[in-house]
Image 1 (cartoon, rainbow, N blue to C red):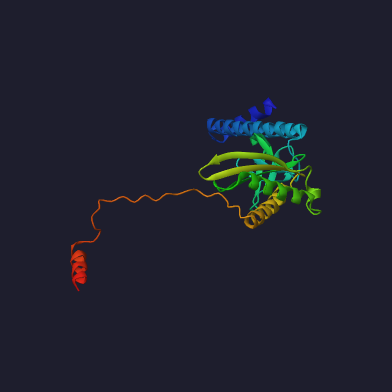
Image 2 (cartoon, rainbow, N blue to C red; image 1 turned 90 degrees about the vertical axis):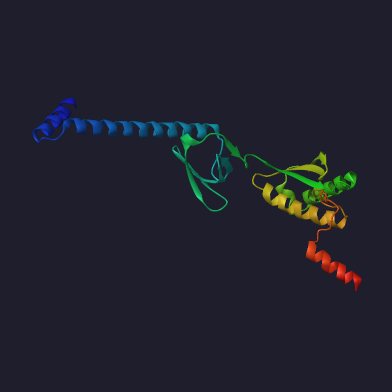
Length: 228
């Protein structure tokens, strides 16, 4: 191999080809190939690690870096996820850091609702729990849920209102549909029970010098109208 390379360089010199330039170019190409090989090796090692750790699989909904979506394909070198807007993102395995898998083994609806500050908290909690239990025992929704709702209670009290929290454990990937149905039922139930949703309290302060806002001409016209 060395003899062939030497003969090649010697033949270039016979045709007045700048050997130094060729060697420099060959060095750059060799470096690029070496650098690319390092990236491929990095992707390969990361791909093997992903398979061994079972961090995610095809059809899982994951968050990787700034991208989230359903895993459509994963191999030893790249992972492809389909974003909610339809984009297909290809991520080199070596670039994958922390993975948030939202559909691994089981999922959860982490639901919080804020009622008005002057609302009866016990009544609001009772209605929320009743709605969640009704959803859990519904023949259509029950198979999607793994256990009865877990009421966490009051999370926050502020001028905006009272924040109440509840958890619903679901099958993997069912948390979004269950959450949508829960929000709908809570809205209807709160309206029927006249429980107001919390809103920021705003105060409008008026300040002034005590003088009339009318200019001179307007003052004169107002005075004449008064004399009439």
